Length: 145
Image 1 (spheres, rainbow, N blue to C red):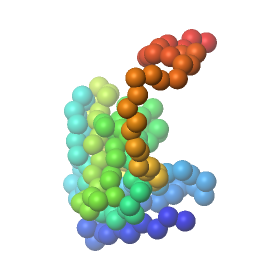
Image 2: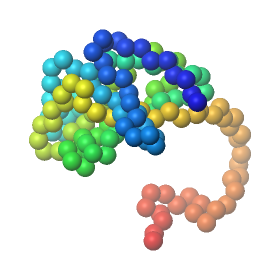
Image 3: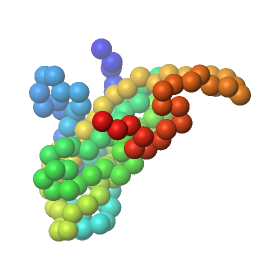
Image 4: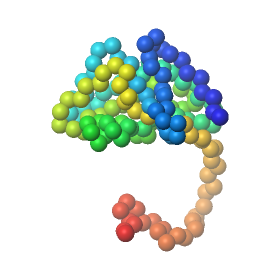
């Protein structure tokens, strides 16, 4: 099991939590004394009140919550956001309102998800020839059902 140190930056911060035993992600809660309003088509940085010490060779990813996306049109920019193992600052969520009305973030609202992933070091090998596939260089929208 991966061990990640977590530090409360705010005494009132609510730490990430799995909402079901088999959840992949840990829900992240906002940490704001006043309501935060996200106007339509605007971006807001939401504090969480905690920082992480992620072991080397791992990263944390910030992902949107599907309920906020489908019900309120709230997404996470730079998604998935990456928290590198050498970052020690407060985790903050870059939230965007894709909707047409204000969205209000109340304190301790579940605002995003936190997922941990192993990171591999890569050695790039320069080559003038790559192996062929059925797809080859077919890009966005290439595959059809």
